[in-house]
Length: 327
Image (cartoon, rainbow, N blue to C red; front, side, top):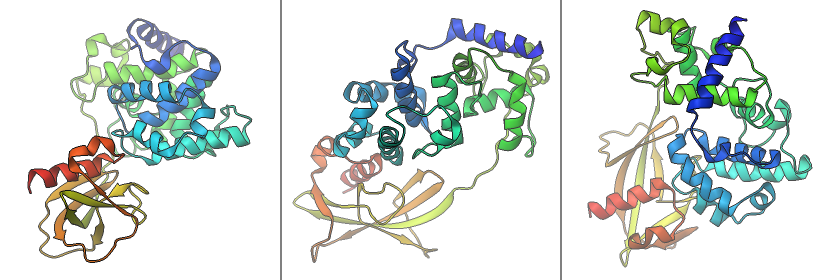
């Protein structure tokens, strides 16, 4: 009975306050499954507000799995350009190809088959099952984790481990409206139980929330250290154009055009010019200008004044802008 009360309160709040998002539009079950697949890939490590225009443009150009499976890679990357983490879109296309080839053009509705698809892990599989197939699952994204941590006032290192959170989420109960309920919990974290200064006066479950009772809303996180990496970035410039190469060497931005780079191990007297944070890596970059003495394989020249004409990762564009600003 207690579970039913909390579930109903959250769903009632959601029915009144939910955002109108393009992947939530009422449509056929086949389209809903496709929209869920695409949006979940886009939402990995990216905020909703950022994703909305990309999702709309993507769906307008690639309306279904069949189109995605055979879509030109260059055009595909252009549609994704600016979202970052390009391995997601490569895996999304591979997943579409696998669904068509191995699952009779139907998105699988079970955990193991979903996880067999490229780019789909435990969370994404759970989210797809809950949202697209109305399965009684609560996927633990950052928003739901935050609501759970505050509701139960989970602060200690062992309490906030993924294994314990997965066990503790049963406090939220289940609903026949599993699709709505999973999204309602996500929405509650996104709109009300914010990382800083949560809007407790708008929360449907604040009366039973332990953090609210204690007026302690600080969150503890499992500390993850970014790996410090050092790179020498080589700049070749000719006729006001920069030389880029196809990246076949590094795991990040695989097969995309980047500046020639060399990783340095524990360099001495390293005077960096640039710093980037990428996944769990802190990239310290030193710029070195060079003359072209012999042909460089897999290379091409780009005009910095025509950046919009090229399919380039944001990483490369930022370096071009830096070089143009400080030349």
